[in-house]
Image 1 (cartoon, rainbow, N blue to C red):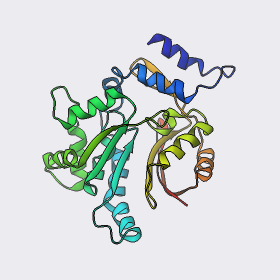
Image 2 (spheres, one colour):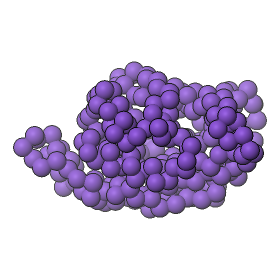
Image 3 (spheres, rainbow, N blue to C red):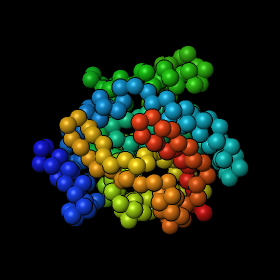
Length: 255
């Protein structure tokens, strides 16, 4: 693993060749068995309340209104695909309020295995109780078990996914050209009239999982919006939160 960390650190040297999608994919795959628990320990110990609140507003209010306006004859609710979900279900807890067809997709077998452990209520699966408790507060529903059962019921499958890398956009793309490629590949999964809900970071350079360090896309808002424009996407909702670093929450649709 030390060799991989060294390679990732080399990306800070401007004289080095920029890291490519295939190298990023191999970095993640090398750590497939280690990654899920290390990631969850690093990033899922506590609820990210701002992101959870944003998603709940989107799925409890914005999405139903949008569906009624754009698809008045569709009474079945939306299909949700979490591309590059990692070993986490936190992105789709609130989505289960409006969708009975939720699919989780990730590159790493270890991440998919971790998700299936929770879906099957296996020993040693990650404890998502704090997330369900917080969702209960958002829904004014004290029956947390009901929410947990709903999420399990509405997840239909855990799928392999490779956009030539997976995870989230700013983790698998370290320059704007790679970002355009990943976004355009993501759009292959988006139906006409569908929406992309995205969370990312501005002005970041790397993130850590345990002792492993991964490069991420260092981008500002103006450049990011230019990429959206090139990909034919319209920003219909944009919010940011700053706590140490600046995270953005956005909804995108095709123009």
